[in-house]
Image 1 (tube, rainbow, N blue to C red):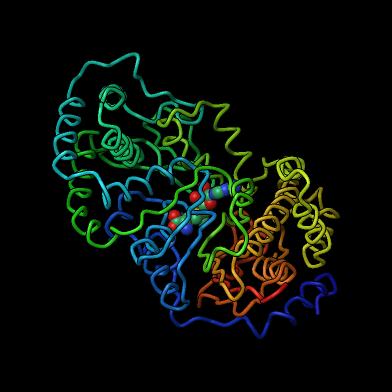
Image 2: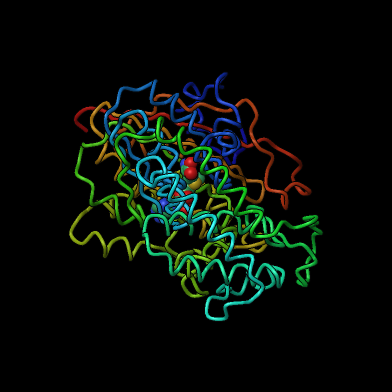
Length: 457
Ligand SMILES: C[S@@+](CC[C@H](N)C(=O)[O-])C[C@H]1O[C@@H](n2cnc3c(N)ncnc32)[C@H](O)[C@@H]1O
């Protein structure tokens, strides 16, 4: 036994027999790749999503009437559950996800294809103009400047002006979504986990070369996307029509407390991973398009579940929001006493000077503190014998494995769940690239946890 990993080994002894390799789960099922051909979900390349098929499989597994996803993304869980006649709730903080989920729901439940066709054709005519609408120029933030060619900047100004004036609210929201969904395609950027990669034609100084080839025009991209939306509409109307999900815009750290106790049968979710990925950077183009300026992007980054080195502690904010309730204090105490987590933190603190970024220590502390609040809330809102399924990745920092699956399952057991199974994908992930050179490639578990709410905890 590695002397420095005693507490983690103890956790392994506790959960080891519940860690199983799944024959069914594969990368396609637990990632957005599985949605690439799926009507509706294929409209937005939301790389952080999981597939609608995974939700279908889990809905078959567990009887349920009411389903919740506190980290809803583009609404895969809520929309799929609604399509299967479940009542569903979705909490999401990023407007990029919310706009997409609502667009799918609108096409499934409301907006007529004829109205959309007319609006699409008028928008595409408008972006053909070569005159820039100064007042509607793309409102860049610092990290999106130079993302578009001058011709695309002009076309975007036309699109923004046209959409802002469009009178029918639901169609306007769909036009907004479609325009947002093609921004990456018409730009000199590509999303790459923690940041945007840049094509040197942008004029930016870039270290990694990205060649995006011939960039399509905004008009061509809009045309193709509208064709997809219109092609998918009949299918969505057949499949997704039913109960429209209840979408909640905001942070689950503040919104979950508004849900009544013991009302949810099933949670299917995937929180951000503790891997430094920054959604506000990768989706900077989309956020700027939706009207976020630099300070709004910075504020949103702080509100997201802490997963970046920039995040500061939210303990105070959460305590204040909860007022008299004991829930946050209990959640903080549980995480402060989770010995395997504290073991990793202790090692990293001792080696602080060797870390490429010492703020990873803060990231890890904040991540588990906030997840502890989320899990305490899930234990409160899920009915006895109800289930939680959670997709998440383990991580490694400075060669120290952080068994996120076991630590979160331990917190869940504390709050009244029984950890039934931790399903592991056959192939895990290599570690983060900046660590490979020093420690060699090791596999990090990618898992789906299944927790069942105990009776009378
Ligand atoms: C791994 S993704 C989940 C994607 C989702 N399963 C799907 O299929 O689209 C995690 C999501 O959590 C959201 N998120 C991060 N912090 C949040 C918070 N405090 N409250 C609610 N959502 C949050 C992110 O914006 C992101 O969309």
